Image: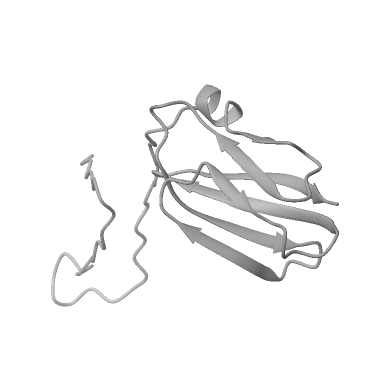
Length: 119
């Protein structure tokens, strides 16, 4: 069995051929996909938001080893309301309506989802 590793994602194409030119039939290909990430489960639980609830700013804390690529905020209905690119530590949410929101924090290989309340 062969193992292939892609460090930055990738596409793998297969060409399945019969063992002789006369063979017609159904062929199967068994593939196992596993992912490794640069953030472990313990670090994921350390990604925190405060204060919650908030009215002005929402602060994001994470271990120094966790790099935040971008953040997305969704309302209770699942509608996208805000995006911020880069390693964020503070998000101004004053323009959002009162209610419950979900924040998706995209890191290297892992998406952390938390909820917060805007008051």
